[in-house]
Amino acid sequence: MSRERIIGGEPVDREEDLTQLSLRPKVLAEYIGQKELRGKLKVTLDAARQRGETAEHILFYGPPGLGKTTLAHIIANEMGSKLFATAGPALQRTGDLMGILTNLKEGDILFIDEIHRLSPVIEEFMYPAMEDFKVDFVVDKGAFAKVINVPLKRFTLIGATTRAGMLSSPLRDRFGLYYHIDFYPPEDLAQIIIRSAGLLETEIDQEAALRIAQCSRGTPRIANRLLRRVRDYAAVKADGVIGEEIAVRALDAEGVDALGLDNLDRKLLQVIIEYYKGGPVGIEALGATLNEEVDTLVDMVEPYLLKIGFIQRTRRGRMASPEAVKHLGIEPSADNQQSLF
Image 1 (cartoon, rainbow, N blue to C red):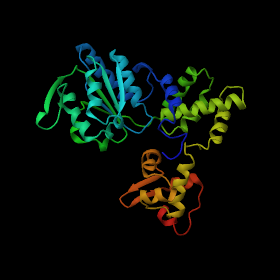
Image 2: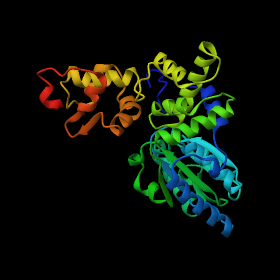
Image 3: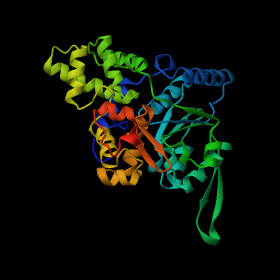
């Protein structure tokens, strides 16, 4: 990402990671939202505990910031297991993964974030580990090469990805459970904000929590980030108590509008509407015009704009919707009025 975005789904820095960790629920009973997913997960974990078995391998997929890592920690706590966390890009050599796998105890959980970024070599190395709980490790080279079969303790692999479509079929098929994590409604986010405010020892009323929730793009990580910014604003500009008026002023100061759009979101929509006459326009052209990486637009900007119907993705490119035009208060010109309306 080329610049820090307060409403971006990815963590900004290590300090934010530590703060998010302190706000995470520890068990399923404390987890707010995703009711259907929680129900299915509870049945799975209860059944595994009753049988005295490890849980099946689980894949969580969905946009960043929705709680995939949090759920991995909750599963470890619910199962009374130890969690080992890593990320796909960090596993470059089979020896790296071999060291992790052989150190896992019975029932331990291995969490791999960004699992779609595993290299093909590492991915193939995982197959027997996931299916048969063993790995074949090659030592020496050429005529002296030999394969050592190393048994592993039974463990649970939890994978998290923002791009499930980039997972290969063989890897995807080895997960027993697939859970899609969707954006949260404002009501659930408001509950999350009130809970987080209590942990941060900050007083906030229901109206302020709902206003922050409406600007959080359906993402708990963004909701907690906005809460901390509003808390700082309230501490300096008010008496530390967060009311609706303080929340609105703080969000305005951060450049976040009533729907959670920031300057980059609005700039993207303006370019489509004014420069490309409402679209369609290719994502590469948009990236070049905005001087932004295409991955930033696809992963960090588009999902929410698609979710609220402000842009449409067609075979010919991206198009802005009439709702986006109205939200920005742009008067469509004679050239693009037909395409927009």
